[in-house]
Image (cartoon, rainbow, N blue to C red; front, side, top):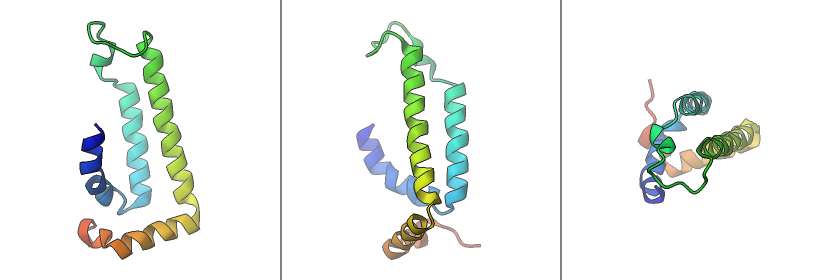
Length: 102
């Protein structure tokens, strides 16, 4: 997973953060969907698990992701941070590479 994130993460985020408000809306909807539709293999007893209470583990994982999303949302809600974020993307050519202009 780490290698996939390192390889695909910059490209996915390059597109995702073209519109910060839309990215945050989509992230919230995606997390809600994941929470409401958990991957069934998580609950298969024949597969090993670090914690015997798989439901509790799933709830803890979702809570951790929600906490991370809230931290990101709060960071980008600060005008100075959002301005720096956009400036960094402009300086790195990220918007030209990933964002379509209409």
